[in-house]
Each structure stands twice: as C-alpha cells, then as structure tokens.
Image 1: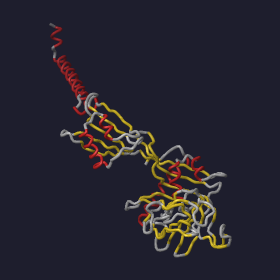
Image 2: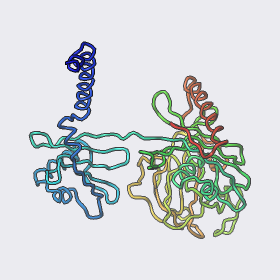
Image 3: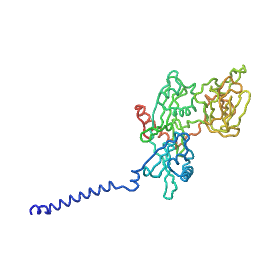
Image 4: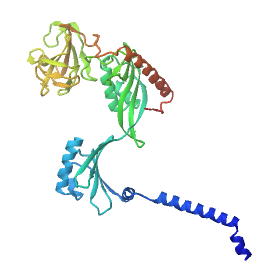
Amino acid sequence: MKKAKNIMSTANLTRMVMALAVLLSLVAIFLVVTKRTPAQLRAANECKSIVMVASGDTLSELLLAQGLSHSDVNNIAQVLKKEAEISTLRADRDRLEFVRDADDAPVSKIVVVPSPWRQVELTCNDSGDWDCKTVDIERDTRAIYRSGEILDGDSFYLAGQRAGIPAGILIEVYDLLAFEMDFERDVRAGQKFSVLYEENFSEGEKIDNGNVLAVSFQALRGNVQMYRYRKSDGTIGYYDAEGNGAIKSLKRTPINNAKITSNFSRNRKHPILGYTRAHKGVDFRASTGTPIPAAGAGRVVARSYNRGHGNFVKIRHNGSYETLYAHMSKFAKGVNVGTTVRQGQTIGYVGSTGYSTGPHLHYEIIKDGVHVNPMTVKLPAISNLNKEDKKKFKEYRKVLEEGIEQLEKNPSMYIQL
C-alpha cells in the first residue's frame, strides 16, 4: 500500500499531470508540423518535365506529345498570343516545363520561359480553360568595374578585351564614345580607360550583362566621362561630369572602328580627277556591303545617284544640320525621300560607286549650309539636365565615384545594386 500511496500522492499526481501535459504538447506540435494542406501534398508529389525548344519544334507538336488534346492546344495557343504576346517558339532559347500531380496524371500546369527574367504560367481551371499569369523574375544586379591601358599597336577593342570587358559591353562603349572620339586618330599608347557596367545574376549564376553605368577615357582632347542617369521624368540618358548631355545629335564616325583614308580638306588633289579641289567630308575604309548607320535621327531629303558621289543619301537632322553618305553599293530597303530615320538605323551599304578608287564611305556634315569637318566640329547635345535634375545628378555622381574608388582598390569586388 505504501507504494500505491506514494504513487497517488499529491506530489506524484502533480508530476504526472505535468508530464502528460508536456507529452500532449509535443504530440500537438508534431501534428502541426507534419500536417499538410492538399495543395502542399500535391506540390510534394508533383512530377515536372522540362523541354528545351529545338529547331523545327512547334507549340502544337510539343503540347500534343505531352498528351494534351487538340482543343487544349488551340486554347493554350490563343491565350499565349493574347495575354503573353507569345505566338512562336525560338529554338535553343525558349524552355517549356510541364507539371503533373503524378506520373500518370494529365498536365495541370505549363510554364513557358521565354527569357531568364520572365516566365508565363498556364494552369487549367475547373471548367477546363487555361488561365495565364506572367511572372517577372527578380534580378540580382551587380556593378562591375574594369580598367585598362592602350599599349603599342593596340586598338581600343583589343585593350578592352585584355581588361576583361565583355564584347557586348565594349560595343556599347564604342557607340557612346563615338560621339566624342575618332577611334582611328584619338587612340594612343598610354591612354587609360575604365568602364562600370552591370552584370545580372539569378540564383547565384550570371545570366547576362546589363547597362553601361559609367565610362572614362583619356582622349587626346581631354578626359571623356559619361554617366548613365535617370531624370525625374523617368527618361534615361548619358551625361558628362557637369550634367551636360554626353549623347550628341550626330556621330563623328558613323561606322565604328573604320579606318580614315582621307580627311576633310579645303585643298586636296583628287585621286581620280587629278586636280586640286576641296574634300568636303571624311572617307572611311570599309568592305563592300558594310551597313551604313545614320549618324543621327532625321528625315531623308535626298536618295539618288550622281557621277561624283555615286549612290548617296542626304539626311536633314534639324534646322542647322545635314549629313551626306556617298559611294553606296545599294540603298537600304524602305529608305526613301521623306523617310524618317532613327540614329543608328541602316540607310545603305558601303560600295565604290561614282568617283571612287575603292570601297569606302564618304561622310559629310553640313552646318547652316556650310560643310564642316566632322572630326572637329562642336556637335550639339540632344538634351541637358535642368537645374533640379543637375543638382540630383551631381549627388548621384559623387556616390557613384565613391563606389568606383573602392572598386579601383579592390577590382575583384562588386557593388550590389
């Protein structure tokens, strides 16, 4: 009895009740942790298959191969075109993901991945129709700094590659600096340059490059600096250190990295005619068929042929400036008198028509009716910052340069944007 008495004592009962309470609490916690909703259970058992679009693949063929009906295929195609603006699939670029609740279940969800930063999700609702939702994938964007120096025999492109700057970024930098520099004459050994640009990552893996954020180049006419900046109205442009527009209305060199074979001159002996006369433009050597981009936005006022210029196009950019492009092998399709062209749009192709000793582009800039030297004329900027934007820009530039200073000391680091 003592033993029983001891077991049933008040102290023992209290301990037993407390132990039981703890046990019940642990059981409750276990049930909460392990309990899953039907949706969670389905997700755990989901079966996913991934198909990379190959050459010759069509949407209907890929969907039918997954057991979808012709009715579903038509519904999905219409939804994709109307709500996601996807009408065709691109080989080696687009990816499709098919989701089933189980191995032998029908497809319940389709994910179309047309880019690393966007995916389209299609789900079948209770009525059998397909609903569409577009999901933007968040980017992990990092600012990367690279710098280099021009060595003897270097081109800017070669020096940029040696500095570790990606080819696509170098092309963008070329386009920016072409407003201020002639890469044939302004590049010398000893010049230093730097570029701050974006790299985009997803889940720790680099996907692509982003925008050029800042450029610096020690050109012959002084240090050229450009900064990418978003104005208060949302528009984006490139500006110099003082907030003045760095993008000019015209480019000095329409064809990047083309070698100059004849400069602007008031007194040049013509290679064919044999007598001395003014050379009112600059000649750039390029192979036949090289695309010729418009040096600035404007309207085509002449598209014709004459003995001197051969096939030529003349563009009026505003009340003061016109440009002329001569010796074309042919005109670009759709470029006619009256056509409005954007800066960089192909207007024709390099040739050797007219008075020409070989394939090249003859390029002229006419200001207020007078021919000027494209390499030295002061070109107008497209737009400058207003007083308020300029103040904010200088604050932004200061922060950006502080970051660049840190990256110069630690080139293996990056700035998280």
